[in-house]
Image (cartoon, rainbow over all chains, first blue to last red; front, side, top):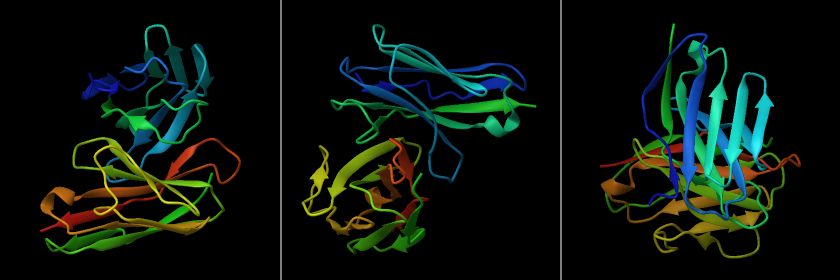
Length: 114
Length: 115
């Protein structure tokens, strides 16, 4: 079983709709969870992080974490063509949480159709 | 967040040669990380570089193949030794914090093609 799993896609969503990206992880001891966006040919950039069960909202983005189900998701509301990118889920298994030594999923390729 | 400069941005190398990638950060950071992103794949952590001590390598990566230097709190190098076509990849330097934030920030990456 892979440590961090994501559907590679592509996931196609019409402009203005909600895009839902999902990620599961294998290590129940994982402490912190991150979503990165990577445009083609560019390096990843952080969108959000979440540490506690529940929802965390930042503008059009909402991260959802369910540690019991070992599941983390990212919702993008009012999707824009500029949201078209690969979204990487990352998990930190190390004690104390934080952002060091992250394990990344393979990413979901999101396409927002105008 | 920290600003990271990497060079070279890209290079084409011959099999059997070695190449050193430099990473410069605009602020002092405790830990620097080197990742690899092979074509169509996600990021894989190669090693963690701490100033004043040897780098810590992840499973599957060894010092002889990927020697790392960390002479001060703002600079690190990664050498890819005795390269083969399988080493063709993007190599990314990253740091946590730099501005007090617990955020992993990446450099622009170094795209290596080995012929």
